[in-house]
Image (cartoon, rainbow, N blue to C red):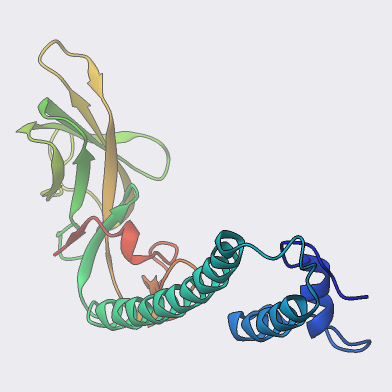
Length: 228
């Protein structure tokens, strides 16, 4: 029996696209075809005493057009996302061979007496920055002040000297930077360490992954705080 309601029955609309072995299609083109088929059938068989109203017809057509517009928008957004991903891969590839500052506390003293840079990221201006270099045994080998610094990312170099005189032995150390306001209260800060980008793996869930050569775990572009 033909539906004689003033609106198209969603069940009939779904059934038009269904088959025993095929899932229901939900594309706007299929829905539009089903809509027109049911609309024509309903107009031909509607109750003359209770015909389909123009406002209801317009509302149903608007819903179909809205679905079509959403599908087109989704296609556009998917295309933009693909382009952004490709641009990120190219940007990451351009960092191969360059030094970057990423969250971490590792610092390395080379045999020639030159240490890798370290840094700090500040949310607010610091009246004083204080750094400590700690050896593998947990002993503080060098403590020094870095002065004041504005909010943002800052990088520094350790000259390799140790407390009491002398030069630190080659090897890996840990550096911790603390920030204080004018009253001596601790401020939020994040210590940064240096690494060199050796390779890039594109297409990760969070963007391309940058291989830091085992000095630190692979990072994303969002982890990089400074390029040196």
